[in-house]
Image 1 (cartoon, rainbow, N blue to C red):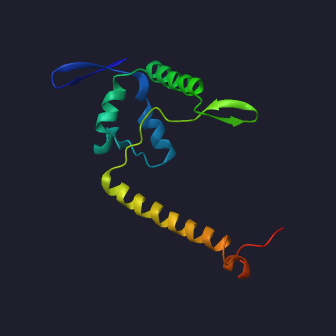
Image 2 (tube, rainbow, N blue to C red):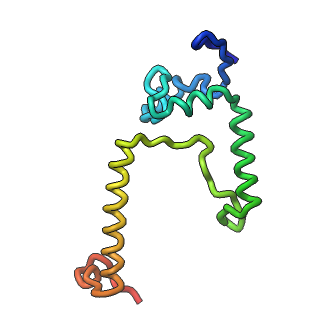
Image 3 (cartoon, rainbow, N blue to C red):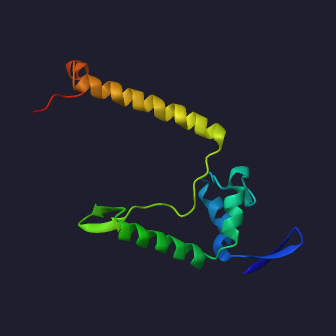
Length: 137
């Protein structure tokens, strides 16, 4: 484990993020948790701090515990005849308020569009008459 000095405390850094920035940099993908240089983005500060206190084994154990709890309580789905726990990431996804506002408006718009489509399909069937959706018996 690495050690890091912060606010006068010597912290043991877990191996959870060891080599993370190097691996993340190779993909070229946007990292919602860390800015370049492995600096936690403002919205993820508390999450990153909590995770840095855990080892990879700790996080894996917590994920396994959650999966077992889901299986025990029936929070599952069937895949190829096998009952599996509903997949849920152990690390929360943090969405800042400004980003959430955009997402909320987009989701609401899509719900209205889907409702309008279903109303048409189960009533006037304009989408079928216009050839957008084929009529099948």
